[in-house]
Image 1 (tube, one colour):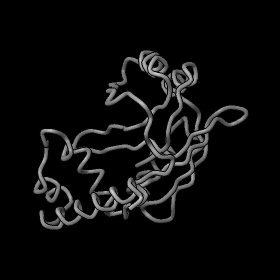
Image 2 (cartoon, rainbow, N blue to C red):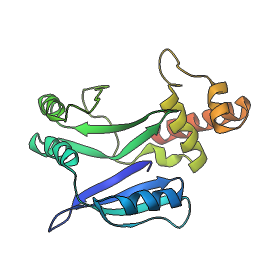
Image 3 (cartoon, helix red, strand yellow):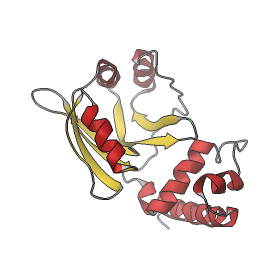
Length: 190
């Protein structure tokens, strides 16, 4: 799973979710099929694409959902998952008053390692600028984010990314230039 595009409650219980999948279809089929919470699912026919999952909410999921609902916080979809070499994290944008966001954060389960990156006036767009990227550019961008390439100070190099992707540093540099060009164009409308 790469991105959750939407989750909605289903009358009679459970949730329907639209997720973007990228990976081993057989492994995903085994994991989803073995889950006690998953009622039905439909995977894409290729190794990437949109996936439908109908599931029963776990107590942890319900606590997160309730924290958002109880404090009138809006989730701006999608929620993006970032894979590092040994980690999985999620990046999400929540919209609401400062007090509501802080209260929702305080209500999250203790096992969540939650980092508030920024709080302030919402200046985002409803359209996702990441849709301006090709699938390969998105893969490189997600890896660069997860590896800390865009952190200050930088936590990885183009050579590190090239090793992980199995290509040359020059190819990574080209991908990053194109990614930055496409994102700036999508954000500025240029």
